[in-house]
Length: 258
Image (cartoon, rainbow, N blue to C red; front, side, top):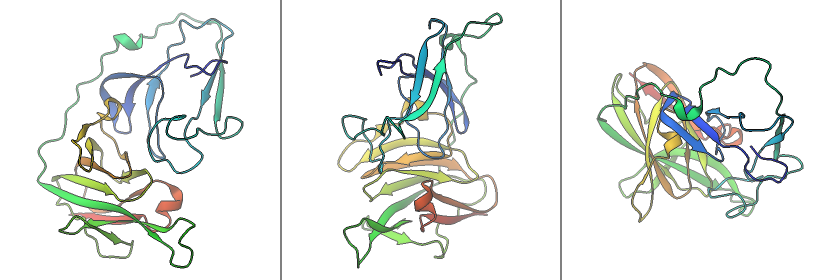
């Protein structure tokens, strides 16, 4: 939340994500959130004078997100249009304040998933148009990996390749061979994000605000994103990128639990 000077005026205290509470509250000046991700946050207005005007703004880019920080790695959203979200005006209390300060919150115990029985290597790829090679990718595709570590792009109608046994826990390694970040969503499970690893570098621990259960995780370009899930519901479901123009253009694959 920002004041008129466009400087962060109040922090967010994040206590939950898509799958419920985090192991502990996390204080953040900004919340990076992709399509389908959710964040349960608390904002403490007790120190803000009555009448103060605050603004919730969007600093994400007006083009495909590739990671990084606004103003350093990319230009933020247009402040006159897509950068605007909400204006807030602080008013006087009309009843006693019985809320608990974020610093005094105690969240329920977090129980991580057990040992995985299988690791699957999956890929995110893009295919360019042969007739218009300079206008960007023609299709974004999910798929598997071959023995040499190369992507094997697949389409919706190709045979199912992800078929966890009911009740088992697996690790899915998402290898992103594209130039963009993709919010990857797996239906009917809540997973843990384990870590992320760029080629030639050590794995980076999960971000504190991703340490709870989630159903969507951002897969960054050139990075392996590792997820762990227990598949406890039999049936045929899907996993996909949650960018609408991607999931509607082949970046969605069925998977079967049985």
